[in-house]
Image (cartoon, rainbow, N blue to C red; front, side, top):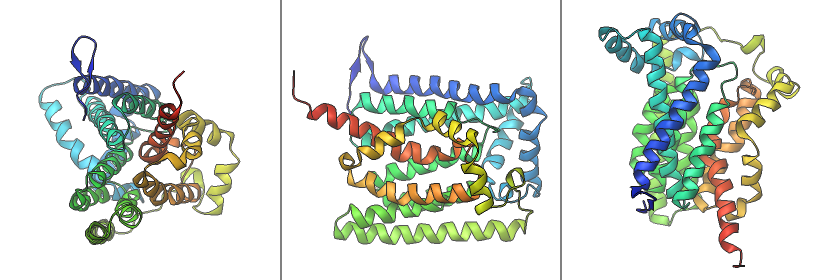
Length: 331
């Protein structure tokens, strides 16, 4: 990281930490405001948390176990400290930490992709914008925000050529959410399109190990908890039924625009200016992510698209604009 200095002698590192914490508090507050303390303390947030711990949360919630088991000790600590509304306080504290960590990781990831510190800071702000507008029909969604963390961690490790870290990241991510199955694909795509022969062999081997790890956890969770009732969003079945529901609701497009803005359009227009690694990440994530969620989820819940937004679209848009800026002749 470049040791930039801003007025007053504050290093860019300190500025990034302060900015990440401030934005993390803001993005969390938007979710809390949308639902209220009572929803967290007594409503569905707590009910779903307890249902996962008790083993009857339904499919797919029951198989997303990482966050509930990490939050429970936090609740115990705050209860012993006699913190008022300790359940809601635990949920809020956990999300603030998650959001702050996401924003710190995004800065490091954008810098590693070649953006200057100013561009990476703008990327943090754009990601915070997307996060803050993604609370439509949502609780605090710990597993989804963990998903962003694990994808950014994996991307950063791949860019740093620390390939072996992808395996433990995949292990934790698979305990968190089934959408983590594309993390090994990130490494495989980079190995195919952006690595020399010797590094390609090592990366391919690690990606296969990560695939195996994901499969073991995915199957193991379903064997451990047994078959769960499939939870249908608003009564709509996955497939053409959900696709039609998504495409013909005005709220779908309103929420996608509110969350993603025009960032994906700017990014795709500037595709030729992306790094090889970012192009590989695009093809590993974006097409299948949008197809699967169009047929299998409610697209108005635009937070579902924060992974491609953080991983691909924001850095892609910024690389495009910064490249254009640097290529322009001096006036």
